[in-house]
Length: 421
Image 1: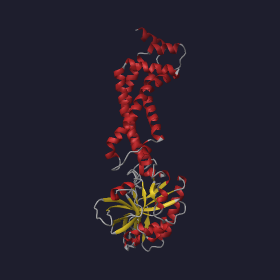
Image 2: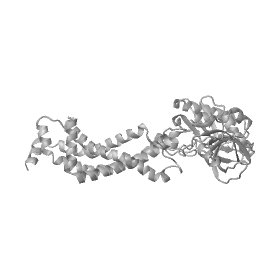
Image 3: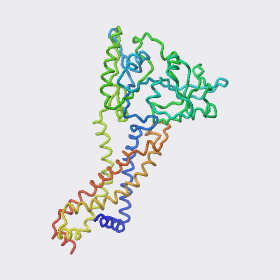
Image 4: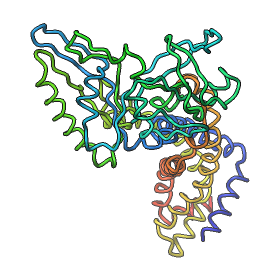
């Protein structure tokens, strides 16, 4: 039966090649635009190295410090003291890291250079959360961190730019008037991995200005944000409860100021749908806004295809009338029409699948972070293929469902009379 449906669909293609080609191209463009939206979301949310564990990550990108006596409030990053007292003491997370980043000119001991590089100041928990691929060496150790020793991990691309080779373990680089010894080289990180990305990673204890005690806001404001890795996403609520207790305990040691983390911590899904440290976007609002765009993109080719399908089905009223006369049910006839139309939709979806990568590549400069390299591990995920099938199925239902129901409701005598006319 399916073989017969397939042959019927191919015959339809041959009968109206121009109209069907236009319909297929319209479907392809619609599916391609929808998949670009899906791909951008996938790149922002799905896990890939070195952020393979995004589904288990929690983020604290901002804090709020309120001083009652001064009636002043500060929103921004946190101090090293807050990091230590509120986060390093947590027991539920598998790992916790504090980090801050900046661009700095990097030189060699014997040569002054002026090119700037992205530098991340962090701790040893960073290497437990993110799965970097080390080309040479290893990350700085806990002993290095505690002692404030100037050790650096650099990307292989940065190593080649600065020293002309990746064989750089034990060699020195200079920035902020500090000489750092290279202890590890990692594979270049894609800029799409925003939390892990940098050119150089060093211990924040090697830079005194990041951990010095400050008098303003009782030493609560500073430079750091937090990433936590849960053992399981089911632990998120327990982590939030534990963090709240630690924060309350820490605030009791202060005279006037109190620290809070606003709506944080947030998940990677929250970030992917537009949340940040100060404003949280609800999943409901995101689905409503994005869903309306996707529905609009589906309706355009659906309306176009309805006329094509209706015209095609009208020519087959006699065939449908005969089949009904010999016992074919409405369910069987609708299924046949949907299947035949699915061939056209499937061809368009397949073309659209390929076009989506081309459109994403051409529009990456304004849809993705600067410098993002599109790689197979971030693009080809099971969810993408499921999306193609889902939207192709929805388009088929929207475009062929109504014509199929309309024609199959016609009485047998009417259908046969139309044929005789």
